[in-house]
Length: 534
Image (cartoon, rainbow, N blue to C red; front, side, top):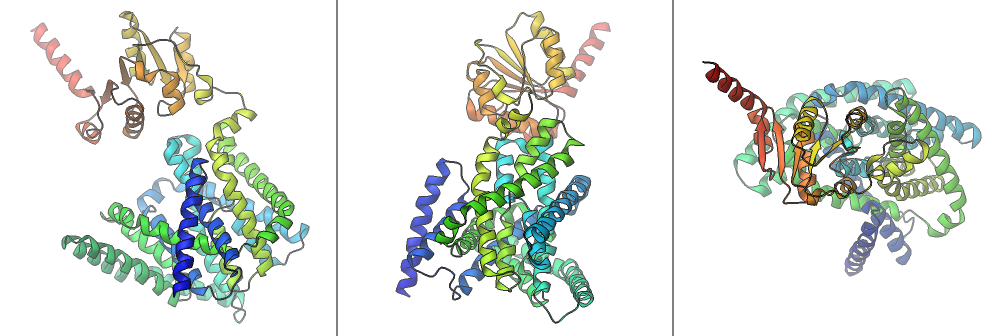
């Protein structure tokens, strides 16, 4: 027992130090846990030990909780709204990536068909754990390339379930392909029917009862009961733990509890995920990594190029060249679910341990490179295409005490015209290139970019403005822009146009100085004019 406590203490210390260092270089904490596992396994000489089943099991439940949280975001209404982007783009990307990688693995590297299939499916996945947080943090999630990248990631997350199921049945040599398909269909149908009928009622009752009790620990224990119960039920039916957790998440996504559930389990999910990636790190042999580094780098570059070209060609039919390149850069890496697939394939002897270790090394290196790529995604895109490219094309303005007009649609044009009449100092910022070109044609100082980007805020001297007029239409864009401006300059004089009372209420928590209600102002003018005429 003492030795176990020493290992845990050392592991936590090493993980904390490494992640503090990696954070300064914007590298995902996932890499920190993997490195910790490698270091600790080397120090205590249990690299590749077969006596790590308990650690692997704990780590597997990290993936279970990750799939549960993904299920929480996969409500049927959301899937229906984005079904074309999700299922068309996602399927095409995965199908073509897997097909080409399978052909190369099977014919060029002469691997057997099963190993080639495992590699092809795994390498066709991208990293939700790294890319999605970046898109949210950078606000690129609302851009055309961000929206399509998220749709593909959603499809990949959905595809993980059948891939993991396939791994389970590939390990069963006693059944024919027909028997496997029939058994999968029968059992999967049973699980889905049970979960969405009786299971749905049980979940709703548990959450309702525990929330009424007003005891946080009771609500949290109910959530754990749901996740573990659904996972164990799926496992007993011959499927992975993740399937049950994912379905449970989808059921809760349709209830009013989904936001609270997600926030309550986030820290536990991260802790268990840390255990999973730590267990992956224990399987890495440093000497093997160094001696095969050239092969790891070569195959990684090949895989990333294949995925990037496929994603670029797919996106080019829908987006401009710049956004297509950004999508390709964002999704060309190998994702974290590949670890789960390789680990399961190795444990069930579907692929050889040496091959599995080699594939894990490729995935690790891919995820180390990914943060650097996504954090410089605009710079990478600008190498291939000349464009009005975010803040890099905005030289710092010299004006002060000026007004910034955000948006140049119909309302923005009217505002600019009125400011011009009053000879006020102002400039225009828009994320619509055509609007920017029109504003410049009319003689205004106009810039292309997003006002929620820090370099843009700095370049436009937001902290020296007299006011900032927000004329954009969507509530989401208003929230993103206002929060970013106030984070940068808390004393900003924001003037925001709102369309409804509900929209104003949604923005009430943000420190906005002035609201202009479009309908209310119009009504007052109409009444005023009618009284004057009378």
